[in-house]
Image (cartoon, rainbow, N blue to C red; front, side):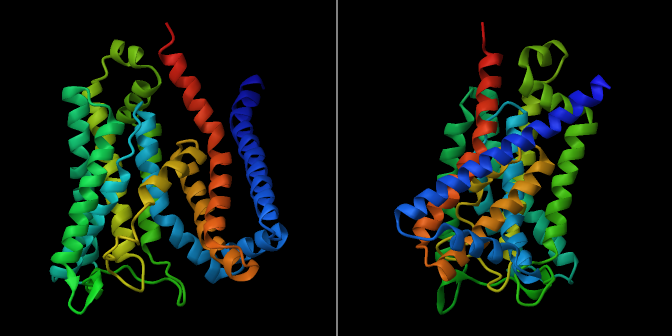
Length: 354
């Protein structure tokens, strides 16, 4: 009886914290709208209707959620290993670039082409993650510094190729579109949801199983929770750090691919990188809201996708300026992320307490 109560409390307590944080975020957003003369009830009604008002709206919400659940995994797997990996942004760029290269210039049968393009993008994302991993392992360079550096390198490298080598003739605002054989099938006419959602969700579930039932997953969590205990147990810290970076790179590379071969109507990379920019950093919020649990990350990604999709309707229906919509969404995300941020700080202080 006591064990059942403890187990249930571990599930219910985070839900209560998240629910309270959501209410606080919504109230803070409402006050912000009132200050600027908008009707919060009308605005929130438009947001909900735009995100969940029908099958087409919900499908679009899921389209926004797909890359976020993957970049959320990148950050979450790092936290599980005791790392603050914010390199998903650059790995998304490289993955998207790889998807354009393989999707537009390889000529393969349908099915094979989609698989090869997806895998190629994931491998490039993983390769881009190895640099910060090796700097961490060999030189002790903090992952925040190295991943920020690699993010900027990836940004300018991808921008260079998109503008000067892969631009579609006569349309400098985008790269060449990937071939039809490299595109995931659209699930619903009128929405941008494609079958890539099954790949993305399956990836998150595989990572959950990896962390839950495998020895390597246990070692990764042990290193993040208690480095001294991991060392005593014979865990190879260097191998665990490298594996966490590679898994994160695979996830972020896949996220980049989903925006090229799994998101109509462009089927290409924008010259401004607008269809991939910010996804890596948004994934940090998704991971924190989802408590760094892969299943929680899926749910949090759908929630953030709803804010992004429904936020457009706040502008159309309630007249709320897009900048204010972004600020309101930011307040809600911050409020939801605070409980996990505080938990991370407490765990960090506990680990290094003399």
